[in-house]
Length: 515
Image (tube, rainbow, N blue to C red; front, side):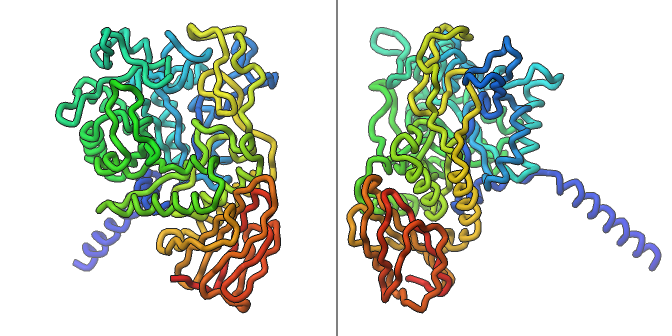
């Protein structure tokens, strides 16, 4: 009997060991949980350029010269670098095939989708015997091995090619022509229906996309211009995905700043209705930072955003949308100091960090051949169409990246600092601090006897003298400078300093809690 018990116990231990060994290699999606704790550090990439091999350094990928654009497979070679930068999530711009008719750029816009249930052949390596789906799965699996999550972009509209194949999917104007939303001349507006009657044809198209990316192993979806579909449409789709994976993340491209539809023929669903429909987060309006002249404007935006997401029974969060692929490179707006400011705001605010490929090394996204006639094209557009100062999503172009090593060092350090202070960000209070200078913003995050103090000068042309009032601060407090150029002087309840133009200061106080 004793021998039998020992045999059963040994067998149980063996089974547990085998299960543990296998489970160690099985990825368990935790993106939604991490996002809702403001802990995602997201890096947006265009796979078509992410690992592009521009051998002659002319900025264009010339296949006839043996050069290779970015693919699922060569992207794997950059994953270790991504992890070393402190990034734990990749947002991949659309991986769907792109339209070639009435196109923008020589490769076609990534957001002009011609199919929603197949992969873009442009990012599938022809040098591998693996199918496109197998290549995509391999890339995602390799990302997961490095503890990197994957968000895949869901395009908002369909290409003209798709319209020609399935015109019943699209909204028509009064003359019966497909609607061009905003100034996006390469796409046509889907007819997603209304709150009372969702268009099941378009819904099923999107459902096929969800099935595809979940089958590939993705951890979430970013919905492009989510505002132009009814909340009911999204509620049904999100519920469907959650029935398969409760941790599957949904991020809405939406903002409090947006209050008009992209066309008179389009529906408009505001950000709060999208959150009610099940989205975990949205963009907020942090991209307006470039327009702010006073610290009060930034602080008010943070307070408004915090108030907005606190109104929901289920947790919600936002991304630091200070810079996205729709925004001009920060170094063109206000130089390197602006990029540094964006890095530290992402690292110290209760939000998920968000950056675009090339931002961390100071890419200005200026292409010498931009908007000139092309030597070769793969669409019906004969020009290298580009948005000035924005990452190229229209052509087979170079790998993004600048040459600013100092900015990269700051980027890596700040991402590490964010991980260290995550308990303060997740559990502490955001506390606005008063400043004597209108151009200076200042705030604190405090929890567990520790406080992070951040102040920045939104005047990028002049140095600014300021006094910031910090409740309970005394000379005896231990202040650790995390990021400073100017030297701050602490006194009773105050910090005095002269902030250089565009300077951001970050301080860590090891023995202070503000409530």
